[in-house]
Image 1 (cartoon, rainbow, N blue to C red):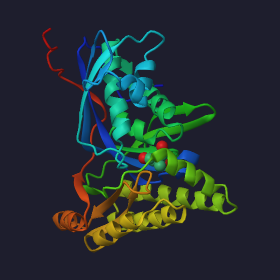
Image 2 (image 1 turned 90 degrees about the vertical axis):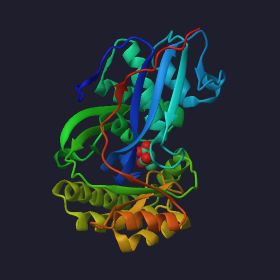
Image 3 (image 1 turned 45 degrees about the vertical axis):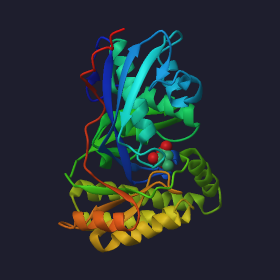
Image 4 (image 1 turned 180 degrees about the vertical axis):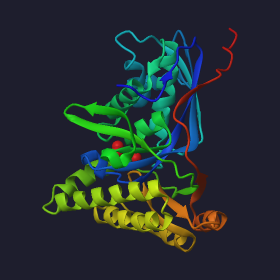
Length: 329
Ligand code: MEV
């Protein structure tokens, strides 16, 4: 499994920074094998990790029991993982559809792996997905692989999806992960302020796709995502905007939109090529592609409509950063 560079070995304390993400096309359908396009965004979680006589997360001694993501991340190190002091700082809003849990798992896993001798990026992507899946119970490796790889990442898209990176597995299921051309665009993501559960939304969509029209709907999700990947690669903003609108209709059909998200999408419309919910939906965030030169207007429109807007661009994947000096004891 050859990834895109390795996370090198470093002595503890180690520190790593991992990006959040927004899904441009294909969320939910990707869980069922359809293509997806995900962008690693320049909002980050940074973790600093050091061996310690007891487990702590940001000073909380009980976090290993209460935080499933931390528990699974440490358990992934092996049978006797040891105990660690973990500190994190993040600009990614939580439960907002912007990949905060994948960035947490990516940053902490990379920092721990660096202290344990380094890791191949493809192996790290598999580890991060196994951790997220164990903590969440459902889902695809879209968020975790994007945080590890960086850039514009595709799943299940075949050769239209760019250069192969790695394949990530869970039991019988496998997702082929690639990275495609970065058109250099700015996007606006906007958090509605309504938190939601990814696992609940994924389960609801799975039940919806069990209905007789489920296979046809899934095929339509796949067609839109494939066309969206190709339009982003060609740099065709108008086509991308139209396909975002079509993707939003499908997401509405499977029941994961929300009146607040619809209101934000409407508010964005005059200054955007297109807009759609991003991530699990049922709350969370939208993503909009601004009309050229209308970025500031789009941000203002979304803020006036009550959202928290973030102008974002493509980010590199998880990387090590200089660790703060170990506290003197
Ligand atoms: C969440 O960012 C995207 C979903 O498709 C879930 C997943 O792929 O794990 C809704």
